[in-house]
Figure 1 (spheres, rainbow, N blue to C red):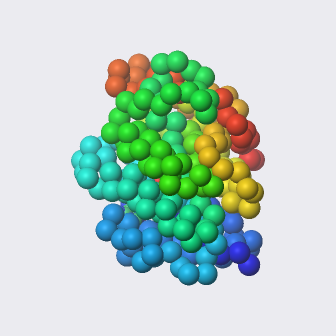
Figure 2 (figure 1 turned 60 degrees about the horizontal axis):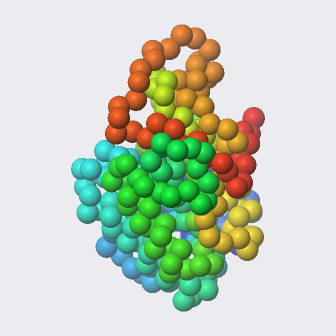
Length: 249
Ligand SMILES: NC(=O)c1ccc[n+]([C@@H]2O[C@H](COP(=O)([O-])OP(=O)(O)OC[C@H]3O[C@@H](n4cnc5c(N)ncnc54)[C@H](OP(=O)(O)O)[C@@H]3O)[C@@H](O)[C@H]2O)c1
């Protein structure tokens, strides 16, 4: 069975990857709570010798957490991917690195692989710099840029759909558009992508964008509280995916 070194294994995407890959891959998980603080470790310290595949899902993934601890955000979202990319190139390991639509400003959609990325948040900047570093250090690596992930995971951080269904999210932006993407379907795509030879930036997301309010309304099928997004949030992050991720029933 193929072995995969998976960072961010306890996160939303990492947990989903573990369940979707079960039976086909042997996962070697890595996470902060598992004892590996990647802000102070080198890839050689943690990536197992015999593992040919590496999927980097570790991130400080919220705008608020990045503002609270910018140094750790820079170390994990930018420096760690840079070091990992160099290591994987030197050691001939296949690397997939996760990116986000929040690298775009949200003013001139639709966003394609060629669109200029000008983030509006510290989170976006740390991720964009990580993407650039991976592309430069390891041209064979694949940078998978996606949008807001939805689905039932049960990780420490909740998905947008979990927030809606649990009642945690109570007010919804009418003017904030994203390609709400099924997290399970994305994980299945990542499995295929690891075994392919694709490289560079790809955009893997749901085929269309909708407002957060429209998504919440479709899920709840009842009246919801509508609000406008604050100006510091990108309003229209509509992506034109290179890889269409369809919802899985
Ligand atoms: N969720 C989304 O909607 C979304 C959208 C677009 C792109 N993405 C991208 O997809 C990737 C996965 O995101 P996610 O939503 O699964 O993130 P998440 O739920 O916040 O999980 C983050 C993971 O990173 C680990 N981590 C945090 N700090 C660490 C450190 N210092 N050392 C080692 N590991 C550390 C966490 O470990 P512990 O649990 O042990 O703390 C956890 O496993 C990220 O690159 C993110 O930018 C996510």
